Length: 179
Image 1 (cartoon, rainbow, N blue to C red):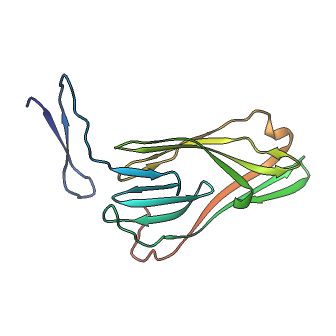
Image 2: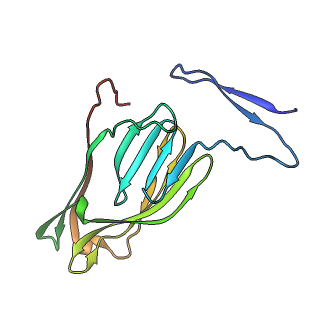
């Protein structure tokens, strides 16, 4: 009683969605769980997708119709290519095998899963790149991955012309569109 109903229209033509606002003295938490995280498998699942990580990188992506579905993985391979000039003279190359990812923390809630990780590249001679820290937010229908880079020292003194590329090779994408 006394709740405010908000109707939201999908601009892409989907069915309307509803949200309800109310003020109550003792709110009840919903028992509906929209997204799950399995830390042993490093896998996030919702009703609509599955993301599985290997060494912290997404290597399994499946689009689902319902929780419990087990459709095939759409990712054939994940690749990282890093190229840099060291001491303004030597060319240096790294790939996904040179990246170290560490899970710092996670929270598996009813509405979202949050995974906080750091990534760094092993350069050699005991050196690593600056860490890139990111918090990945997994909701029922979408994923967000904002990140920040920490520079504990000035990389221009050692590195120049740094180029980082991330690639996904997919399979079975007939009928898909990129938006």
